[in-house]
Image (cartoon, rainbow, N blue to C red):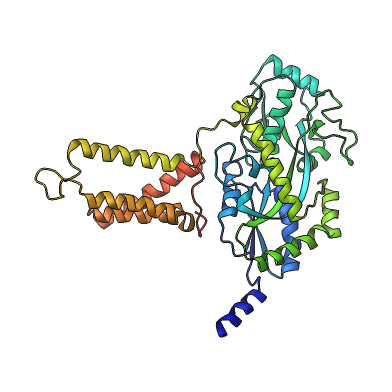
Length: 429
């Protein structure tokens, strides 16, 4: 009886510690700005801090994966974006919208194309002509490779009768750093939503050659649409809040009530209006149906022949495990053909490897598969490597030195340089 009362008391006091709001994109971008506005208002509704965490990397893989695999205890919310319905079609992650339970869709914005004020192109026809004359020479950005703004540009190029890669896409995690690169001369154009570029536009630093919408933006009537310039193409992004799929119902309802209060508030609508963001609130049921329908649409896009060049990637989430398994298989084959597999460690003239060692290697793989998502790659890999070196009687000073050097370098190579989405774990690495 006391146990049950204790449980009820804990639920009644939820939340009793800070809540994390994971943003898959860089600070200063549109998604980050919307996330921070919502977090600020949710703090007042929940009575605890709501901290925005910019979990960037992998073209949205890092943030969306971290949010989906986080503990389903109600203390983690993710600002999911259109990329959640793109990444798995590209083979970058197994995470889909089904790994989340939607709270609400909170915002939707159309894409626009921006160039520097001193750019030589006055309209889309001028830009198309320049691309035709020198395919691949112009560079664009706005998000990571294969992200929603990349697809927006590729769709226009295809509509114009050009190759989807006729403009070289520079992968950058978010609109804010992309616009900085535009101003520095690193890229020739940026595709993003108008609110994300508003400050530079209002300052006269950049121009917009068009907006990918059915009609002109209400607060920017001077900017023509792509359709008005002869291109039958529209594109937009959206942002929504979601939690891990298995969050307890009672806690889900607390979060949903807080989000609904924020999204329906005059303060939030004033923020959207002054910032130029589009309002597009949807209930959990309507949001889930939207996700299902859009997922099918993007499946058709990314499986089409026209987008083969856009979706190609060298590395996916199974790259690292595949390399490890291939190396293990090669070692076992060498041992089999050399006759060392069945020898004991005391065999004269040979170090030998017995079946216990093979079992230990298999056990290490099983341990990684079962616990890496909870412990994180670095902790799991360090433990496994130490265990293996202990089994093979490596001296502790050497074993510790190898772990301290080899494990971080491996993480740097795969997670940072090759952008392989390795497990985050409880500590975030």
